[in-house]
Length: 412
Image (cartoon, rainbow, N blue to C red; front, side):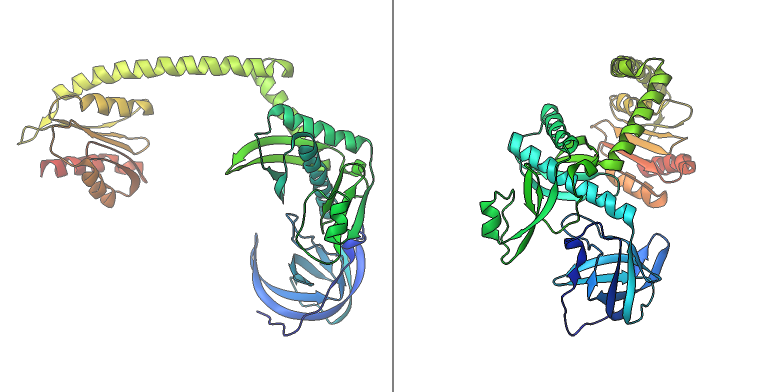
């Protein structure tokens, strides 16, 4: 790992031109860094400092740029106070080097980030919901809103207002000023930093301190698509996508709707009604199945108890490895067997390795302790209490021997 004994200030070219794709920089230092763990495994890495760079570092919810420094692949870009540190896959010679930004990735990030500014401004302006955090993911972006729940009407309202500003193709520019100057201009989020600050201004919509990369006009955002909203601790997380991502997701959603509608034999417009009908039918069938399984459990329990093994202390033990039975039968069957005085049920489902042990409260045994011994001999996961336990074996082939061991333990 490299150790730098001095620091320098890296000129950030992306501050003034987010569209800069190629640049020249002077390599100030190139030192071995900690190995990088990627999808192809661990690889060697070097830490490169330039006098100026167009590579954006991970910061403010926006991931870093990727690209090339000469022949070296840029794996990561870090913001370390005044320095921009480039992590690359090979050594770079000191002197002048050509940098090349992965433009599709950069422009995608620009669309998402400017779209976030606009969407956050609409939530605040129209519904009084401030954004407290932002994350630009590989597929979906999120903002966390603080305040009342953003209802479907509010989500659509903010989306509609943001897209209206996009269709108007409003200018997006950069302003510089002190904290006090920006506050007088109506900055959306107050900052505590001193000195000269950089802010992104969307014409007649938003002014927000930000060091990220952005498009030149709202029209280049393309489209904002709000996808979902969920509660995250005290805030509301809104999922959205912009530009090419939004177009791709909308197309995928429509293709999926068409495929589901075709399978259900209805049109896309009738999809919601058809799914609602299927859910109602499913619930009715489940209720009927549950009643049938309960009836079957009562009948089988009476039959199995009559043939139970009786231990020396008078405890009845019903042991069985069920095969080709409905998996939901195991629980009600064990419960019904355990209703009989001084009776224990030791049941397993042969195909899956599921175990259910149940006993009548009058039986002086501890099934939780018994299961612990069984799982020590036949690995699996499960638990319960003195009267009832459930588990699943890692290897279903051990079902019969697990039941046999449980019976021996009861007998002893």
